[in-house]
Length: 257
Image 1 (cartoon, rainbow, N blue to C red):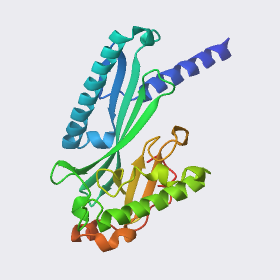
Image 2: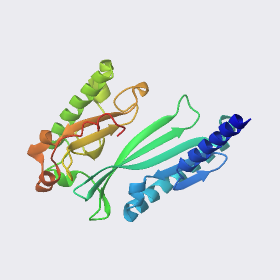
Image 3: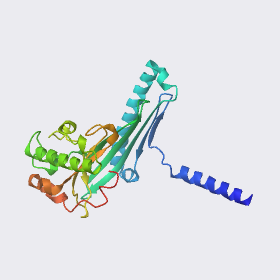
Image 4: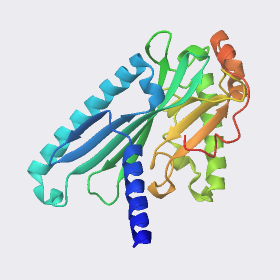
C-alpha cells in the first residue's frame, strides 16, 4: 500500500513537472476551425523591440490562418469532424554577432488534415542598433541578381547540400532538378542566418535553411547548407570583414538549426 502511494505521488509529481515545463504560448487562437499558437524563446523576449516585431508578425499569421480555416470549414465541414487545423510557429535566436546582428529562426508546423502535416522554415536578421529587420546586403560589396557574389554563394550552397545528401545517403536526389529553386538572388537563394563561430562575437559564415520539398522530397525533411566566410571573402565589405571570422563550432552542424 505504501509502495502504491509512493508510486502515485511520484506519478503526480511527474505530471505537475511536465505541465510546469510546458511553455505558454505568447499568442493563441483557438476556435472550432483551428488551434494555432505562437512561441517566442526567452532570448527574444529579453529584447523588447525584437519581441514586439516577431509577435506582430506572428499574430498576423494566426489571423490569416484562422480566417482560412473558418472558410474551409464552412465550405467542407466533413473535413473537420475530427477537429480543427493545428498550427504552430516558433521564433528562436540562432546567433548574435558583434552584439548587433541577431539571426532568428522561424519554424512553422501546419496540420490541415491532409496526407501528412507540413512544416516550413524562414529566417529574420535583426539589427539591434537600428531596431529593424535587415538583409545580408551590408556585408557584401554587391548582391545584384546573377552577380558574382550571388553566383559564388549558389555554387557554395549547392556544394554543401551535396555533402549533406551524401551524409544522409540520399545522393540520388542531389540533382540540378532539385536544386533549381536555389537561384543567384537574395530573394531566391534560401532563408539565411549568420552562423555562430568559435571566435567570440564573430560569424563563421552563412547557413541557408530549406524546408521539406525545397531541395528534396518531403521524406528527406529539412536541409541546412553552410558556406564558410572565407569562401566569400573576396566579396566582403569592411563591415563584412569586421563581423566574420573563426570557424563553425563542431556541434553546430549536428544540432537543430
